[in-house]
Length: 147
Image 1 (cartoon, helix red, strand yellow):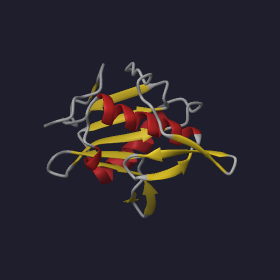
Image 2 (cartoon, one colour):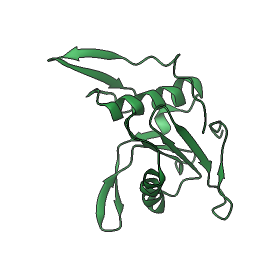
Image 3 (cartoon, helix red, strand yellow):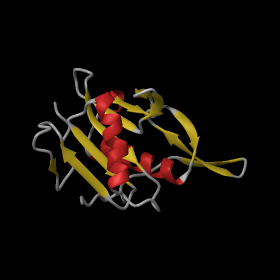
Image 4 (cartoon, helix red, strand yellow):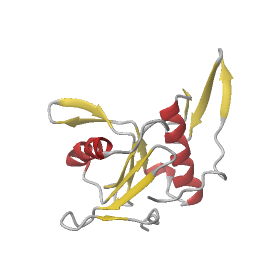
């Protein structure tokens, strides 16, 4: 498991009609702050503001076809050639990252084909280097963005 310090990550929050909303810097819109959205926004803030991943090369909640089903991934970070580079699966804080979470990510991986996988519920963060599918390595820190 990787330790990620979100303490320097600041989210733009506001109250609207008795609901808390958060501004998504990638989608550039206000969203209802559900527990899963809270995790998604913190990991986005960390990737963009701490690790300097380019926001312009990040996609959030886009539709993909997995088998015959329409699904939606949480986050995909693209490399400078606009090829999927990192696939991120976010869960609400009360959802334990488990084999089932990994299987969900792997279902998306079959379509998206990324070199890195990241699983998080905000408390648990796991990241794998999947560049060599014969030798997947779980990392001790998040990878630097490839230049």
